[in-house]
Image (cartoon, rainbow, N blue to C red; front, side, top):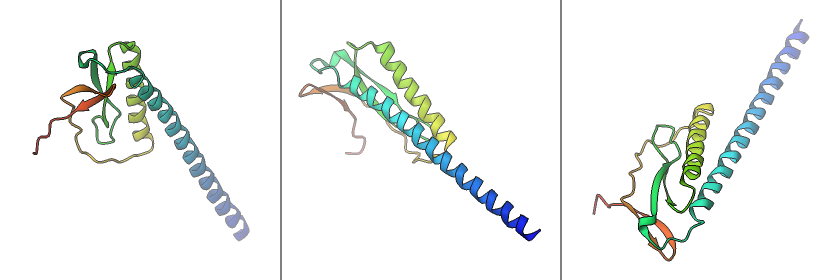
Length: 133
């Protein structure tokens, strides 16, 4: 009887260890997929040279565990904006699901939106208002 208890205990331990390992593998895979999507979004954002601020906008991206975006990203109106914004939405929704699925915690600092986009040496830069000079 004692032997059966040890076997059952060992089996439960191994099952739990495998489950945790599988969960870590799934989390790594989900994180990798989000990283690839984020890289694609960044590459698209950087694919156009910034020469005229009027041809640029910005949008919120990502999802903090407490709510709200993780940041903002500039994009050129020369892009297929519907496709670009759809990718950003996929990433943001995916990050929100990831946060819930893996019980992710984050700071609850509200990310303020930028005031505008400016062009500097061909790159789009977000301009923020310094509220505390």
